[in-house]
Image 1 (spheres, rainbow, N blue to C red):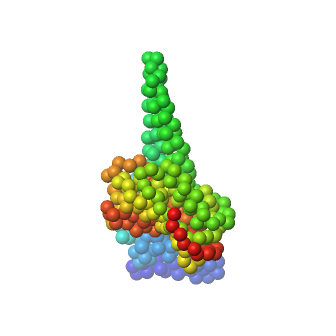
Image 2: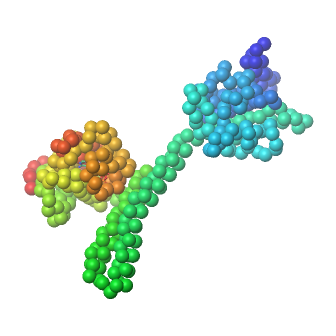
Image 3: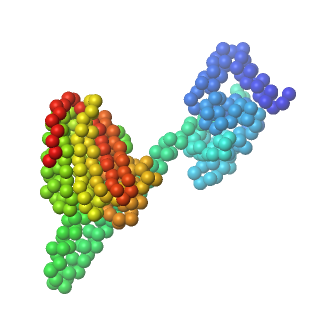
Length: 376
Ligand code: ADP
């Protein structure tokens, strides 16, 4: 009788064992969402459930009758083999939910939360161990994203803070020399960098609200065409390098958050201006179709390299085109635009040609509309 047959025999005994509750226990183990492995006193695996196969790729044939340590190769975050640190067959410490990586059959490793219980006979003898393995890969990935986010945020915030501190030191030195002639310049920079800092903090808060699904909207009934016209009028007051053109329709009504929609429009128009350093028209087109209003913001700017198109709406994405121009930005704007539009039940997309220009578009669900087009 080979090892697997022996084990199958034991499993069978466990399954039928003459006692109804034993058979039920086996069924429970088999249907558990967590991976369960049972070893005997010799650390040979005698029971493995389907969740173990889903988690590791190892089938019963791979596992039953083999030593647990050899197959799982469980290691802690420093890479130490778990068998060397905590083995249920050594010592009396409980092995209560420790995070380890284990080896999958295909050679990759997966994070699991592993707990272990000792199985003792009535006379107190250690006759085996039961291991529970819960997939922790998604949580680990989320932790990684959070860590990356914190380090990028800290990096972004450091730049304006360093400038503000630099100017404060400089102005103290000027003051010590009795020279206040450049105070105006210093204070302007401090003010500008403080605004930048506030914008960054607000953007980072928006990103975290979007990520956690807690972006709060205050929707009110709004005529989007009229509202866009107001926003464009405000933009025109400061945009002296570009001609901002609006092609709008008569009225288009829906339930939207005006502050957030203005944020979307400002972001797209600011980008259109920023990424077309040689000027040219920035064109905003409003159109309506089948229960949605579409807004397109086009520029004749630097365009986006084809290879970067898939990354445009990602978090903290500054593309190679922006890097070349050495333009200031956090790479958060379009991620927030997408979050706001999607929170309204809408969608965003972009069309672009390198060195020709880009059109950023978004669509929002509408209530009703009356068409009477005109251009301003
Ligand atoms: P930021 O402008 O702060 O870098 P955004 O999230 O607004 O961040 O934009 C992300 C990236 O997308 C930019 O860094 C730039 O590479 C690219 N991009 C955005 N708008 C345009 C545009 N109108 N034309 C060309 N590239 C753009």
